[in-house]
Length: 102
Image (cartoon, rainbow, N blue to C red; front, side, top):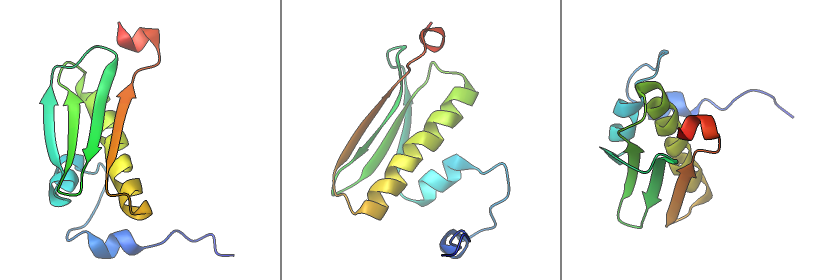
């Protein structure tokens, strides 16, 4: 059994990917609609995929660091849905720590 990571991502993305990865560019390149709006303190973001489109909504009240983390998290929902072949997905990500929600 090989422990080597698949290299398909290198062939799919039309430009070099060097850290830090520009997640906004990647989301737009994948055709995902991205919006920032005020959400309840307990909600970091959400991902919605229908047969017609994919959409990520992030909490505009969160710090830029939290927004980047949430964007990566919501992008993972998109990639997993794509890999698993789901046509419709809704994922709501709620902060669990009382310190984060404050």
